[in-house]
Length: 68
Image (tube, rainbow, N blue to C red; front, side, top):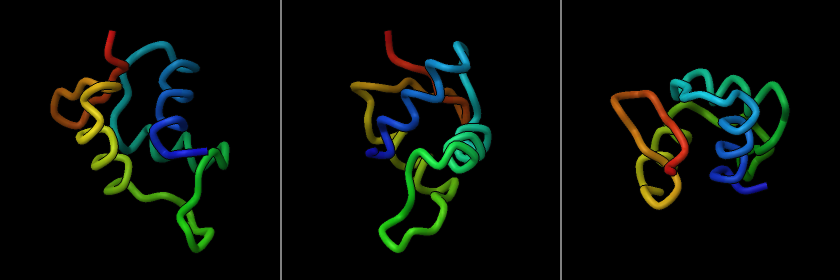
């Protein structure tokens, strides 16, 4: 699963905005996405993907929510 898909899934499950750290923890706990070497994703990756995909996410500080 791509990281942006994992972020979307976690946000849909939670039903409310989440911090980057909360998203990272949930993605890793559910093993929705890993890095190319098989290790867990890090906050920096979730931050970057949610920041760059303005078509999918809205950001306010470190809080991420799905774009309506």
